[in-house]
Image 1 (spheres, helix red, strand yellow):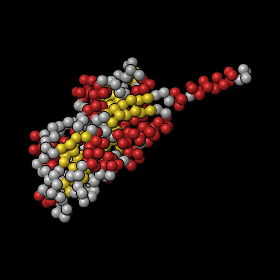
Image 2 (image 1 turned 90 degrees about the vertical axis):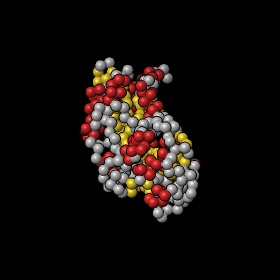
Image 3 (image 1 turned 180 degrees about the horizontal axis):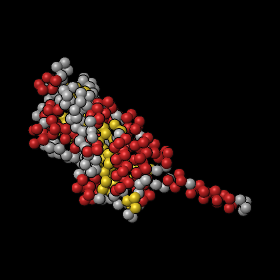
Image 4 (image 1 turned 45 degrees about the vertical axis):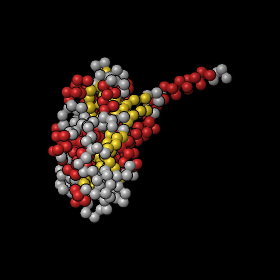
Length: 350
């Protein structure tokens, strides 16, 4: 027995030294936008199965993600409202996109099914502004002459937290409605003018409010509408076509994006894009990291995760109706990693 003990100890040491065993100790903490949470959670689950690296991403909204990465309490932050180059430089951050997705108006009107309610941008803005307050308003009936719309008050559901989804949605409303632009504007948080309104935290919260309240309308990333089986609006695009939200219409909107001309941080707006098949409210979601990394090993693990997601996570993204980033954009992103992300002055990637 004593003779075998050194062999047993040696075997245990080899197991402990194995790469997969070492990876078990790696936990990456992150927080931010709820917009990409459905795909991030699937990527994280699969990546953990393959590598034992744990990605702990908390869906707290873009405002929370920005605050936490600035405070250095997470390894990376997520946002749907990209930071401007000056803001990135001030804090010492890099920023890169991961996927693109659609924001969709969702509603709860008894007797009206998904895709049956037609709205255009100005009418949608008037509803969220409180100027249109009942479902049988002439402006809605004009767009839906055959729909059985009740004489019911409209309840507007919106985000209560600092939200990139809100930024994308209000940017669209500001684009299609001069009055919304002047009186409300666009941002992660706005003063919602509709008197009959309710709030929810995260895409999850807004989805829950719309599902629970008859006569309500809100806005969520499309995956949340699917997961919660909430009816969505058929929305009129720039070309005058009423469209249903799906991967094809999101991809059509993303197709015209020229990422090579995007400013530092890859900030690019994809709302109200041209094309007969383009969904009007599409946005990219972004990751923020510090350029100067205190732990080179952990920083490299973060970048390995996203490199894996770019290469192998496309099908998972598409199944949830997100649009993967094109290969040319991925190359630009990885070049940014090489140049910008360092630890003790040395490049972290590759």
